[in-house]
Image (tube, rainbow, N blue to C red; front, top):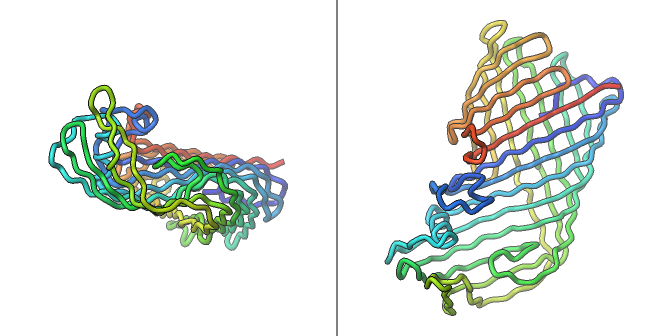
Length: 344
């Protein structure tokens, strides 16, 4: 969240936020297809925001890059994909309920903002971003899979999705062009000398308009089977349906971060925080410690992931890092936030 600063002169700034979570496998397992990291689950997401710009008085303009990905799936889908992707023995006779919902956008653009200070230590910021679409995946799939043996299976699923790359059926396509907008706002409010509230909403209203977006609406099945040298079925689905290109309006789902701060003593404060995304929510409780008039430390515990967050803030700099493992390669959750501003 942007530092609460009274803007009286030209002020460059840099902001980086990244929140990545994978319930079924560790982050390193996603990158390397690590067959030992599977724990099951129904959600995976990553939300990334990088912005550099300058403010003058109450107005700001920045160059923005974003990457947002939400996945929701059944536990059967996660397990079925894990087993076949890593060529693990399948539980013979087991039927898997397959369902997947994906929402992915990569974009870049320009963000214009305005900050209004309405009390000594309280401010409101609103931003409007013009975005150019770079990458798209949006749609769903539902069906079933049946393990016939440890290395053979049948599947059938219905799919309806738009994309820049056809990761399901490897159709050769041209990536679509997209443009759109997003409205965001943040509030930093000192309600009483002891009680403070901070809220940021990204994509309060947001749309991406894609031209000539590749689309597949079809039923996929395993009717045509081939096997590798070890007798394991090779994924090679047969499609019944159609593939086309069309205009597509993608809705950008709101992302919410809210923090409450209650001062217990002059030095210590109780903290409560929530992250809310399209795929799932995350809740944190913790404590803050005031080092000086302009600097503080904080630590929060995330209940859903057991991640510990540690943060430090001073007048023109904020940093926080959260993970559920000391070795980041074994983490399922990784959250990083950096805000830097300097006046000249």
